Amino acid sequence: MNAEQIFEFFPKLSVQQQEKFAALRPLYEAWNAQINVISRKDMDHFYEKHVLHSLAIASYIQFKPGTHVLDIGTGGGFPGIPLAIRFPQVHFMLIDGTGKKIKVVKAVAESLNLTNVEAQHIRAEQLNQSFDFVVSRAVTGLESFMQWTHNKVHRKEINSKKNGVLYLKGGEMDEELLALKKQYHVKITDLSAYFPGEFFETKKLVHLYPLR
Image (cartoon, rainbow, N blue to C red; front, side, top):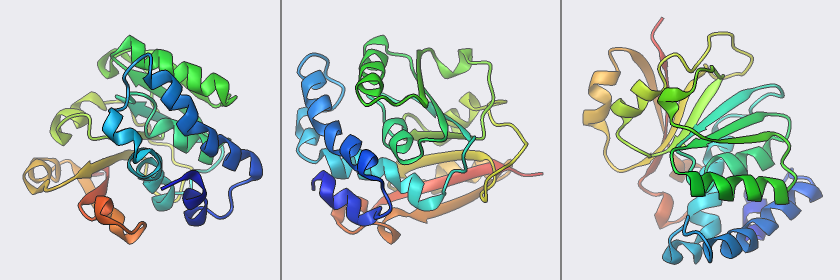
């Protein structure tokens, strides 16, 4: 898969957005040669496994301008960087506990002139801010992750979907969700509904928001 195939799923991208998506792979290849943030094997499937996977969130929700999103455990910038390109009027804070990964995120954001991205070398537990949404790509078990998000989602809502956590995850999760359903509404979307291919057959997006 290449950048042009991404555009087929998101036909309303501006020329500037298309150029930024096309620039992603060369940028990450250059940085990956210095700091290994993406496995060498995965670089061959960069647009499918990293960019399009991240953009599944953009298929589920159209963030309104002024929305604030926190990406916990962003690694090299996923899903935050692709989402920031897709939603230039949304503010994204990308955090990770590994400093060299945040170094890459900052460099990529600067190269692409993503003024809506802020990156910090900080653990989620240390961050004292609240957001409309928290996003992530399976950095840990869901139960542990939801503990990290405690008090990080505020109640005032401006989007069509309820403020909460948008978690990209693969495989079975019934056991993980059993305890969480006592505290949260849980909506699961199969990514195969958005994108074809074997990679997406077992991938899901989990939307969790508090029972009120």
